[in-house]
Length: 265
Ligand code: HEM
Image 1 (cartoon, helix red, strand yellow):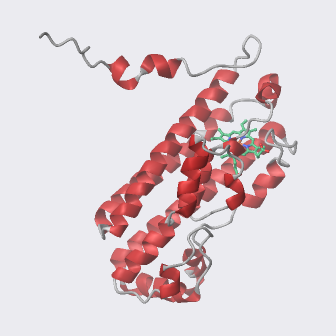
Image 2: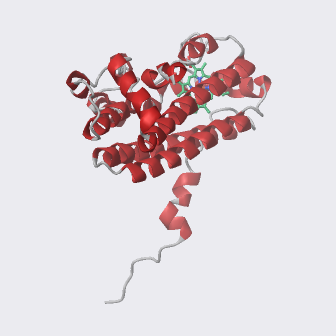
């Protein structure tokens, strides 16, 4: 029997036809800048997907005590995060009037409704039960987010790893309720101070987690500035107060213990 399977090509492997059919502007014309707006959001969603894939990997590697490979994966995550922050420059070439030319067509749609962004927040410990209810029951978004809500965070994987490394992480932190954000813990802070002073191998890992925390804060800061310059203090399409709401999310550390100790080193 001759092999009738079509040869693998760039186009069919990457599903280019399908990919290029996914940008569907809603404005009349359509307005020139709407394509950029759609493309950039789709690119972010793909990066979110890739980040979640890599976060799962880091947690698994830490759980398997494979520090070197976990750090390597963290480095990849940090590089992606840098690109994600830099990409905001592109959208900032869109002026307020260019955005207004199609903004009304977004109706109530908003990045606020990105389940993958919430999944990343959950992985990093910023859990919120209220976020679940925003997605229809049994939808892909709700199911994925619910799974992440009940799963241990990256910080939990880190604490469990430290415990196996011989550090006296309090047992109640190792079996804590993972559906809430990890709270600052003096016992962990003492461990971190010891690590920074005496354990360069694990201090390196701590530094990568600080990079990650700072990188996410950087994205939030750049996003709110972009929002301010594009729509000023107008409310968001997602019904929040807009830049004022976003400003409340900036500067909140994901891993408070790692920041708390800096002044003590
Ligand atoms: C002109 C460009 C943009 C404007 C004016 C804008 C505006 C806003 C506003 C006002 C909010 C607050 C929620 C609301 O009421 O809608 C928001 C949230 C959000 N936006 Fe944007 N955005 C822009 C671009 C982007 C891009 C490119 C992304 C990438 C995915 C993004 C992701 C998000 C996310 C994840 C949230 C939720 C943040 C949180 O709750 O902490 N936005 N955006």
